[in-house]
Amino acid sequence: MTILVTGGAGFIGSNFVLDWLKQSDEPVVTLDALTYAGNLENLASLDGDARHSFVKGDICDRALIDQLLATHKPRALVHFAAESHVDRSISGPGAFMRTNIEGTYTLLEAARAYWSGLGDEAKAAFRFHHVSTDEVYGSLQADDPQFAETKAYEPNSPYSASKAASDHLVRAWHHTYGLPVITTNCSNNYGPYHFPEKLIPLMIVNALAGKPLPIYGDGQNVRDWLYVTDHASAIRAVLAGGRLGETYNVGGWNEMTNLEIVNTVCELLDELRPDATGSYKRLITYVKDRPGHDRRYAIDARKIERELGWRPAETFATGIRKTVQWYLDNPEWVQRVQSGAYREWVQAQYAQA
Ligand code: NAD
Ligand code: DAU
Image (cartoon, rainbow, N blue to C red):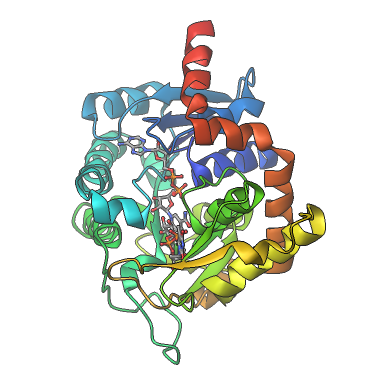
């Protein structure tokens, strides 16, 4: 059987596809629009691998989705495609409403039509896996309990509101039409192929370039951090054994302030790539806060552990060391992303095909 992955050229999607094909021979079809965040180079190691095929396209394109479902007859659709960056959602929310809400709606309708037409066995096996975020739950105070799956939604940014809307659509398509859906709500991921607009990769690449390390507000906002391949293993566990119509929170049991994160990145760089001018911490610069900046996210991941036996394999100490080392080992990837040359790289791949 095949799985169809949307957004598989992005940060988490590409890590998921690479991890999936390491763990199994089940073919993957990746659908991705290759927005600024989509980088086919992330999947370059799969070039020539018959188990993987890539389709450039938009999740809002119903005819294309129908055609992909009819052609590949996937047993699961794993939906990562989204506009994902909170700051971009504040300066330009339109793309978030279109991709995250309309795109999810389009996929749900296409999946519903496809699933309705399947035989009983295939119908029972099919899964629509929706990849979502802890940001839908809103912001916690320091002493509030972590987010459980029962926590009311209180999204605060255009990004989290659009993801919350998509979660509600997924829930409704199960409740009303019986579509076999499962949603995972995950905390902040980090690891290889992370676009350097997000906190951790931005700090690494700026530090290496001797540029300021911008910390929003007082740097005391808290996030829970999960190494990206642990997210991939959680999705595999949920696809294999998750209960239909349920949501599972996925997290790393690893709450840290932004300042702690940036200090850790600087200390690792001081060790691995010492700078003659002194510690990279000298580059830390406090800047204007993000509007509506959520103070704290924290995930209670006991349900997925209790029901499916999933726990993260990496600690933050092991994951962040691997991550910093990956950026040190892949300066060409960073350079092509920063210069925009990765887009030319993608065009070159198409030209060769
Ligand atoms: P990303 O921005 O790195 O990648 C998104 C991918 O979706 C890109 O490859 C992009 O080209 C593609 N895409 C965007 N619009 C599209 C469209 N209309 N049609 C087809 N493809 C389109 O995002 P990410 O960080 O990898 O996040 C993946 C998913 O995981 C998102 O749904 C996000 O909400 C969720 N999530 C992310 C995190 C995190 O820490 N990054 C945490 C929890 C959940
Ligand atoms: O919680 C899961 C979410 O994590 C995902 O759903 C989002 O797709 C993903 O982008 C991420 O959202 P955040 O807003 O938490 O991630 P970001 O890396 O943008 O910021 C992390 C924290 O660091 C946040 O408190 C803002 C702060 N920050 C960020 C940047 C880019 C800074 O202080 N300076 C910066 O330059």
